[in-house]
Image 1 (spheres, chains in turn blue, green):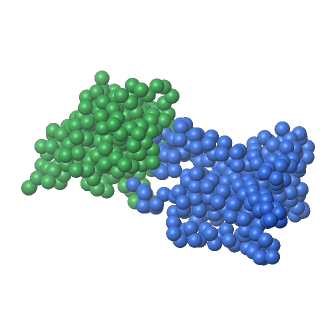
Image 2 (tube, rainbow over the protein chains, first blue to last red; image 1 turned 90 degrees about the vertical axis):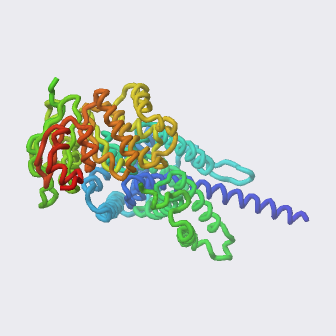
Image 3 (cartoon, chains in turn purple, green; image 1 turned 120 degrees about the vertical axis):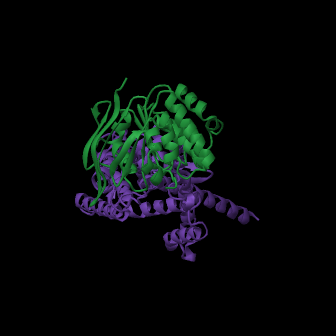
Length: 306
Length: 238
């Protein structure tokens, strides 16, 4: 009797810890996924460089916190990441505005490698240790399980940021212009909207969220390599497609689902030997969902164009 | 009051090697309603697109109230007071009716209440549906929305590209009634139409475009009475 109750308590603790870290990882994916989905919504471009921008934000975090106090360095990480995203769009995508979409995509792949190679050059290819950020890295007790504060904070921070973003898009003039441009470039021009400014705004928002995401993500994954952006970037992209690319709530919910599923598989008993397959599972899940709902959870049907 | 709002001189538009507009000159005076008529592919839409900055003309000059706006970007052109109702309406289906109207005043920072009331006065149905998504409106309602949207920019010149296209005859009549009323209330209009009969009836003056050139011009009445125009555009039996 006693041992059984004890087992139940352990299982509860275990479930809670898996759920907590799943929600947290999902939230971090969500912050990256929004960048993919916003850019796709406006340019119909899969910005392959976005995961690497996220990686660079992580490296910036390492270098800047090494020389500056945290309250200064973390905002600076956001500023520099935004500048990077803005510059990439102006230098690599804007000149191809009238080119076929495939050309822009290849340009994005090029930027992705440029960022990875530059990171290799700067770091010498050595894994870099992400700094311990006070408070975020501190441990806390939740329902009997030990975890870091970052795990608790992430979902709330994501919800706050997404609420702000949704209000920006639905209630402000810039947001209205973003929605208009996402449907029709030419008519937006006839309204006097500067298309290029609106596109820049989407890259700025996407990069800023990726910078916030990098601080949360790398606090839990202490080493950054030049490839460190590839996998989270890809998963966030999957989350965006899963939720219906172009939809912000879709990207967020997709990211949470993927984060939770992934953590559950990783947390299954080790003698089952399935945890190595967690990434494969993520993609299998995508295939299954898209087979039944090709436009994703919240995506618009393609026939919607009037 | 014979001030030229719009003055086009020797405008040329080229797509690759094809010259769609081959040196067109015309003018629109303040308070007028002027129409360009012509068959499909005659170069009417290309002319409008070049004026509004969507495409760069290959040659010629466009002046708005005496100011050279040739090949300026469309934001600048809109800010000078030139608004267009594009062919096929092109309302934003994902924006509400109210937002579609507001976006017509995108470059304005003043109060829009008065202009909204004016547009709702012309089109009461838009007021009833102000919260609906633009894409849920019928074709005729969408055309009204496209006209209202352009009016929100307080245009010095309102350009309309084929407003009757794809609409039921009874709706076309409504649209032309509105164009007349808008014009009577002081808006200068440049109208492009394949429906020559309707267009010539409302127009002060008209130009006929054929193969990228102006082949005929006159008042609406003169062209309605012209035999060539009757044979080619009004479906009169010869």
